[in-house]
Length: 302
Image (cartoon, rainbow, N blue to C red):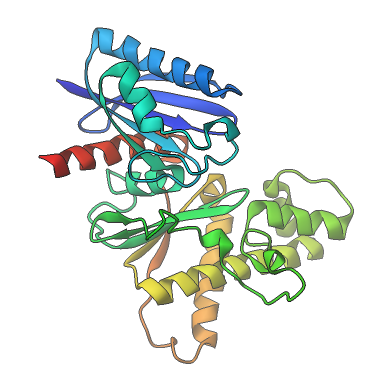
């Protein structure tokens, strides 16, 4: 029986799993992200080599933040600065002797949803991963659309306003369309230091006017960005990932804001638009998506 190693590189931790062809996870490893390139590569490779001793490992899929070229070269790597300019595919392949495919983390989490998740059987969809920023992915005809410079899906850079002094302040990443933006705006107005968005939702449910008004802006700004992408690409589905996607109240009010914008936009009022659904794989999305990506690459080669 053939297995695959899936690696999910994050700024604070690295998760590694052993999966079969159906996507079932057999083994799991988790360790804090080292601060130097050699230690990261060596530790990842050693876990995979240990798997090889007990299992028939066919290939390795890697999920990593930042701009990932198709040959595995990391133009950037998010918060993992020591991997900037590293060809992660070559490094791991040389140490393990296995076929390796590297994928941007938002792409990996998104394509995972085709493999038993929220986007099963859907050929065209968009995915947004909402956290400290907003990443995402376009899946077109069952494949990840990467763009000319491997930067597609960077929805957080989208401009929602026109701040002529600093356009960075107009992006989805800075506006209250991200969890960090929501917390920043609430804390400025409340003069508190709230670090958990769930507290704002609880206060809104209990009738606090400030929490309600800040959340209203948050949902509307995010819905505005989603509607812009939906108009441009006409997907069949919008999948929302990130920790906040598990919050049913968040999804309820995001959908309401999304529907309200359609009603306000005269040209769109009678058109069908894609449903917004939560991602299903949570913290394991990176590992699962990394493996699904490498399976797709092997299928192409065949």
